[in-house]
Amino acid sequence: MTQIQPPTCFDDIRTLVKVLPAANESAAAAARERESTLTKPAGALGRLEELCEWLCAWQGRHPPQAERPLLCLFAGNHGVAELGVSAYPAEVTVQMVRNFINEGAAINQLCREADMEMRVHEMALETPTRDFTREPALDEAQCMEALTYGMASVEAGMDILCLGEMGIANTTSAAALCAGLFGGKGKEWVGPGTGMADKGLRLKARVVDAGLTLHCDHLKDPLEALRRLGGHELAAITGAVLAARLLLVPVILDGFTCTAAAAVLHALAKGSLDHCQVGHVSAEPGHRRLLEKTGKNALLDLHMRLGEGTGAVLALGLVRSAIACHTGMASFAEADVSTKERPDGKQDG
Image (cartoon, rainbow, N blue to C red; front, top):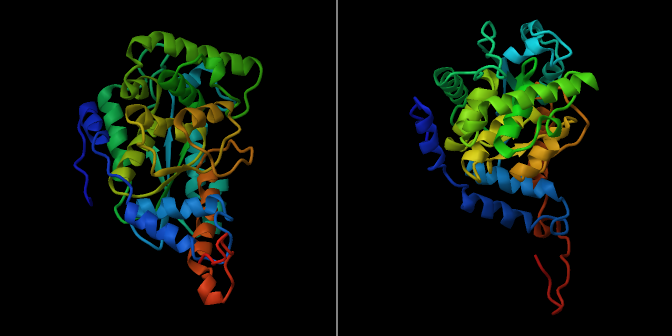
């Protein structure tokens, strides 16, 4: 599938998630066969071996490649920022986008080290979402516009898509979205975000709870939860993850907010995130809870909570290391190394 017919409404999204393509089992089997011949005990490289099989399965080829990765960073503003849920004012979103463009942010340095392209997508920064404690953050048309924008950011043939975000108050939105999708109160999902503590955390929890109370009759529908509690950049990430699945592009998600946006698809259809790895587990306490809910196991745990795609890009290094071992190691036969003896006295390999 090389082109996606742009969806026009939530029902179109619901239809798409019912026909998601499966992994390429032939490519995965080729990866497993190759691993079985390499000069190491079976399973000795742990998750690195699993990463190669995953990558082959979703790229639909063997050997896997990571020569053309792309980071898409989506930035949006949130109406609940006016309630004081962030340590920084809303204008910081625009200022940080300028910093990304001027290559002054942490993510710019990591992308330079990884030799990968980074695209910054500004999501209606001049039009923050509405305060979700008073009304839905987005109407359906706005949410669909963000979803389809995110979908359009994905191109067929990409090796790997890394996803990140920027948006003052978006950890509050992410916490509310997670609570809407999976249950629980605000205190179970909120975290420090940009540096909130004590009274600030209690305020965030109250804001989340107020949003859950207002929209409680609509949260059984994951897309309604997204539009009512989410934001422009969250919806765009949801769309990008969906398009990547339809185009068979493997995805590395960043931290809490990014995973929360992807979790909308998990709530719509189990298995819809099989083409995704989570780059790191954030210091946001809600992220560990979210990983449990979605059945994901992050690749890194570095106590980071910056966002921007930093964890996803760092995890790309692990993926590339996995590929290097898988494609570059000699086989037992090539290296003239003896394989282990079986109980019958014969040798494996």
